[in-house]
Amino acid sequence: MVRKNTLLLIACLVWSAAGFNILRIGIIEYPPYLSIVYFWLSAVVFTVFQLFIFGRLVKKHTKRIDAYTEEKQLFIKFFDVKSFIIMAVMMTGGILMRALSLVPKVFIAVFYTGLGASLTLAGLLFGKNFVVRKFKKSKIDQS
Image (cartoon, rainbow, N blue to C red; front, top):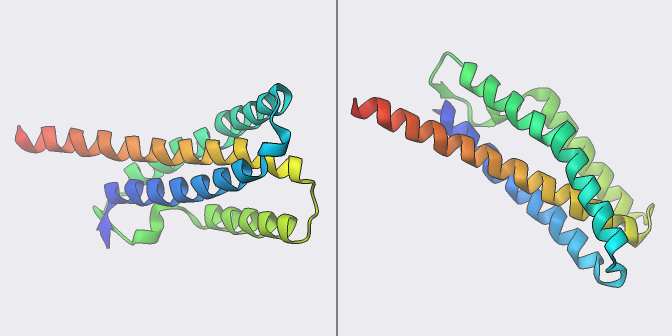
């Protein structure tokens, strides 16, 4: 059992690690495709995922965690069941796409770089929420 605010730190570490790994895979594949067009496409992927998926996900899960009435929570409750299923499907799909060469390397370079950067930012936003709440709690405790 961990304090509910620690769930935000766990989410930060999990999402940052996943994002960094996906970003790393994209960057490794990028050298043959260095061009403004592909950089722009990676930026579009990043923006779409950040605005419509991961940015919303961070807000949703932070709000859910804040709403827990019990201070101590099981450490895996940084996500709900639906999010664990989505993560498992995305990981399995990504591994299969690469292992079976279902998409061209340029797709891996462009898409994974944008997706990985967006996931990493989501992790960092969870971390920011952890720090902000930790700081607010410290100020309240000092009063």
